[in-house]
Image 1 (cartoon, one colour):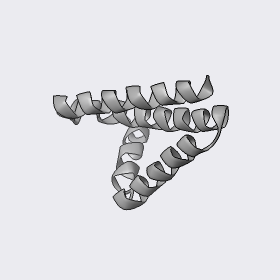
Image 2 (cartoon, one colour):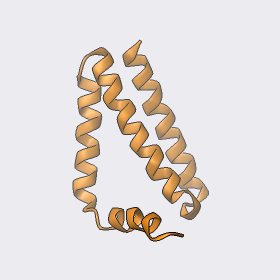
Image 3 (cartoon, rainbow, N blue to C red):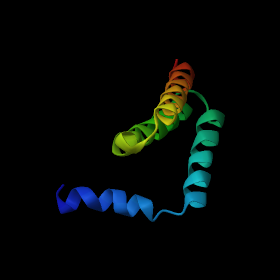
Image 4 (cartoon, rainbow, N blue to C red):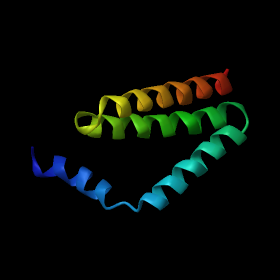
Length: 85
């Protein structure tokens, strides 16, 4: 692995878990409370971030964790599409 590829996981490991949770919670609430397409786009941005994080950590997650992540991502994308339509 190149040094630039290691930098992102190392930076993510130093993120305060409480701050990350509160930011994700704020984005979810904003996406659910904002009207129509704006709320849907906020949820899609959050889903894109979750997909990127899942790709980085997929190999080290247990199968049950992978399943939960896929279910949550599917639900989030479904809600986002519902809000946009």
